[in-house]
Length: 152
Image (tube, rainbow, N blue to C red; front, side, top):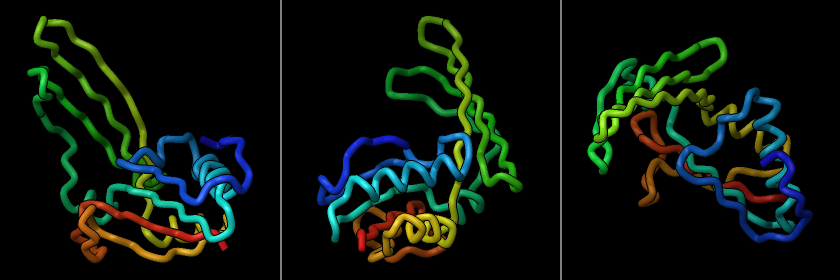
């Protein structure tokens, strides 16, 4: 992601379903945006789809159970680190066959202004910001933050 390896070859780059923010630092995330910008032709678009930090924090659950489509039970334990802006998660899955597995991940939640600054540093200018996949306006109550920026 930080070294896509293309130069001015694409009209669009799309990053969906909160797959941005998992790298170790904001500098590493910036490298990913820089690489996407480098891969775009002039006038090309970058779409980044993220969870809206404001909504996520308002609805934050540090402990939650859910069941996946296979019937496995999953316990998610989450901690929000306000200094780093990261949600650190541990997920314990109890599989239907009785096995138990654990997964860990950490994701940086960006505010719109933080992401806009990163895009601008890469020569991208925000064109649109949506709050869902139906192009609703972006607000603090939007679940998603879908940002479309254009390479200058």
